[in-house]
Structures are given as C-alpha cells and as structure tokens.
Amino acid sequence: MFDNEDRFSVNDCCYHQACFACEVCGRELRDQQFYLSGGRLYCKQDYLYSMDRKVDRCVECKEPIQDAVLTALNGKYHPSCFRCTACGMCLDGVQFALDKKNQAYCLPDYHDQFAPRCYRCKKPILPDERSRETVRIVALENNYHVDCYSCEVGKSFKYDGNSYSVEIDLSRYHIQKSYKNF
Image (cartoon, rainbow, N blue to C red; front, side, top):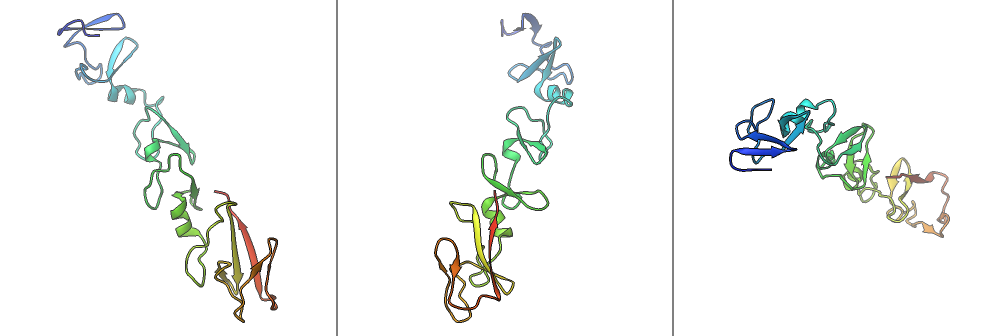
C-alpha cells in the first residue's frame, strides 16, 4: 500500500501523502481506517454518515452498526447495547423476558419484579427449573409456594404426581398451575 513516504497506492491508484485524505472532511488517512467508494476516499466516520440510509443504526445508542447486528423487539442493536432494563446486564446470547411494555429483562430481574410473591415467605414463586412450569397455591387471594402453604388445621399438601391432597374440605381453596415460556 505504501510505495514510499510520499506516495500511496490503493487499488492501482497512486496518491501523494497530502492527497491521501477524506473527500468530505479532508482528514489525512495514513494510519487510519478508510473506505474507497466510487473512486473517492472517505474516513470511516464520513463514509458511514454518507451511507446513512444504507447503514443500520442501533436503537439504543443511535450509532451506525458496522459489525454484528442483534435484531430484537422490532429494532436493531449493537450486541453490547441490548441490555436488561433493570440491571443493565448485556442480554446478547442470554435468555430474557419481556414485560407488558415490551421492555427486556434478564430472567433474575424479571422474576424479582414480576413473579407472584409467596404470602408466607415473601419470596418470588419461580418456575420449576426442568419444566418452566410455575406451581403455586392460591388461597383467599394469596399466593403460596406448595411447601409454604398449610391448611387451616396446620396440615401441608401431599403431592402424588398428579394432584395435591389434604384431609380437609378444600372448597375455599384453589390450586393453580401457571404456564409461562421464556
């Protein structure tokens, strides 16, 4: 590329050092990333801005996306710009969930903010790790972990693989399974 200190060769075209400059801003391009388009030289910044309509811009930072593009939520992002709404963790390649406003959350923050809370222990009621199924007991409009709930006479539920049972009248209680896919 460099013939000598004063002359540059790019795609069979020779340039004086002073002429080896950006067509738009005049910045010297020696030791800089540059683009050759239509026989004209551009610095990286001016090339990307001149190609504005052809270059995708990140929804988050509004800068041009030059390399990998992450498409999510009807927008395009730099992979490092797609982050959890709550903690700011990068969500590139990570399982995430959306709230009702279509905001992305890492799963721990999503569960912390939106999972039902157990009335007894106050901890979130989370999906089972193997099946992604959330099992909870709803009694008198309160949510309970199965292990945290005991009936009014102090007995806990027994699970036989298909249903829960206890030796009292459950007419006031309702066991609910919630299915959520993340």
